Image (tube, rainbow, N blue to C red; front, side):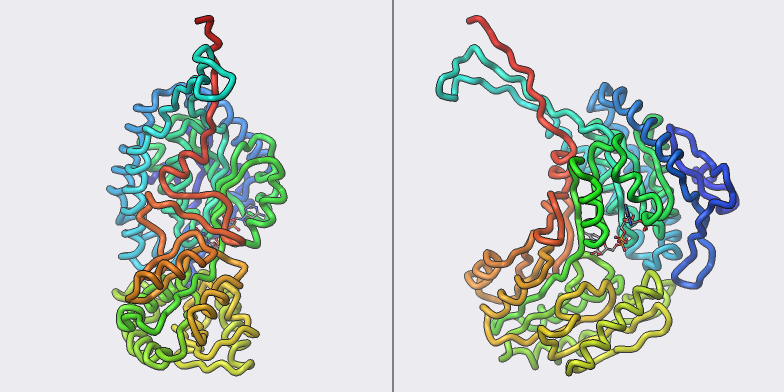
Length: 486
Ligand code: NAP
């Protein structure tokens, strides 16, 4: 099935139902593996003219798609989920090389995505609409009745990041098309080959020509053009805050949903189950080398239990294997590129220079940063505030619960946070005060289940993801008002 999407590792784009090859073979981007530099594939650096054509096709297709019965769209989504699931091993193998994710996690991502697509299909009732009577409002009578339908927004631009190339693409595509939109999909360049395989699954399932189209090329080259294109009616973006900020300016009046960076804190209180906390913190901080928006990115621990917690975390970290994800049980893998590894290293160096203690790690070999634990991090250090997107965990010792809340909230980010305590009242006290999209009680910060709302405040996002919320975000209520003569 996947033979159609590439020719000798040169990948094509899905445009108006056809897999189209680049006309200019000099205009190809080489996607190399962060693992060993091997060639994963080549994709087209699309031109502005190519993008105009894609958007034109998406616009044309959308009008017809909106007329396709919702139950038929549901059937197509179920089929896409089954096809994706069937090809989970092949896609996971590509992800291993393209984004350096271990096979088990890559396969889990693909299977979780198939579930997400099915769950989206299960939520089609959201598109039912409603009927309202004016007579409940002062001055109006039964004569005025509104039929409120949920209509699609038009052409949705979906932009996904490298770290979950399948899941964070499908979480935009599936709800958009269920709601009757068409989609122009731009994957992160590193991750695009995996993503094109998923696009093929949707096409194979029967998504009609033009309803789902792929666009390839560096965001830095085509991003501004596509984001500010008048043919785009909604932007659904996941990625860094830096790029998100830029997009939101360019988008002007085009509505958008943005999932951005984070600096999730794990707050550990005096009465916490420290074994549970250490276990969750280590897996939350280091899985996929911390390249997760919801990775635990700092610990705020009250001083009386700090030494015990640090000792347990050190023990737990001895179980982490770092290296090549081809080997089983490797948690810390090479980062997506060397530039990111250098950035992570610079955060560690800054903390060290300003007096923090490197308890474990602090070493780097090209793009592999070894799991690093940094104690006695203070507010004057970059590591206290910046998102590393790498395997480094800072510990900030605080005097009490109030200081933990204060430092957590001082961050420019507000994605998630964890609080570890055996006292449910304290847990709720902290949870209510934290300026974040979600608080996990006695668990690591994490996305999912995908039906829960997922959102960030401050620099962590705009709008809400999660199956039903994403469908709602990509529709609008439209009223047709009956003025009866009763
Ligand atoms: P990124 O560099 O910001 O890229 C994200 C996407 O934006 C990619 O598709 C990228 O394409 C594209 N892009 C770059 N410049 C653009 C422009 N000028 N116009 C339009 N698109 C542009 O982020 P990343 O490194 O892939 O992902 C890591 C970041 O994403 C972290 O900050 C992480 O916290 C965040 N993230 C957030 C969530 C969440 O749910 N809150 C989930 C996952 C990740 P190219 O690849 O071609 O540059």
